[in-house]
Length: 228
Image (cartoon, rainbow, N blue to C red; front, side, top):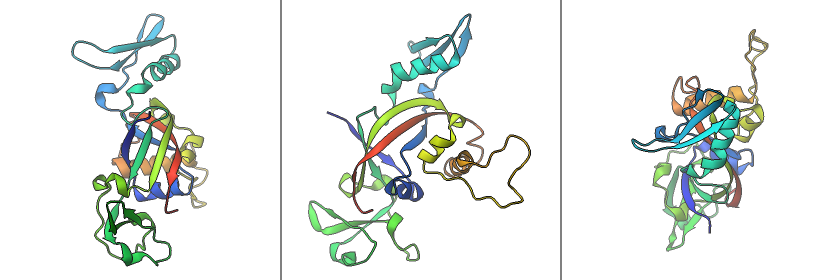
C-alpha cells in the first residue's frame, strides 16, 4: 500500500499541473541529507545521511557514478516519498457556502464530505479581480484537495543540472525575449532553463539559483484531478 503526503504548490504551478505541463518538482535537500562528495584515491565518496556517530556512505569511480549509486541506494530517504507513493496537493483556497458559486462558470467547488453545505473554492481558477479572504495553502485539509499525484521517480542532483527538457517538465516555457536581448554574448541561452532560474529566484529568494543547492527531483503523474 502506498503512502500519501501533502505537498504545497503556488497558483502558477497549480495551473501548470492542471494543464498537463508540470510533471516534476524540485525541493531543496535538507542539510542532514545533502551529499558531501569527496575524492579519495581512485574513487568518490558521498555521505548520504549525516549523524554525530553514523552515516550512510556510497562510492563510485566518478562523481556521476557516485551520485547514481546515491540515488539507487537512498532514493527512499526522500521526505516526499518514493515511486508509487502519492501526494495530495495543497493550494490557496477559501471555504464558502455551497450554494454561493454553484452556477458560476469557471469556478470549481469541492464539497465537504462531512458538511454538504460547505464548499471549497480555489484562488487559481477564481476571478482575480475580486478580493477574497484566501486561506494559505498550508492550512488546506485533505478533503479540500482537488489534485492527487503519484510519484514515478525521485533522485538528488544539483539545481543547475536541470536540462531544458526537465525545465519544461517543471512547467516553464521558453521566454519571449525582446530582440535587443536575444543573442547575448557568452554562454547565456534564453531557453526554458532561463525561465526556471527566474522562477526559482522568485520563490526561494535572490541568489538562490546561483547557490546551486542539492535538490530532490520528484517526478509525478496525475491520478485524480477535479476542477480543470
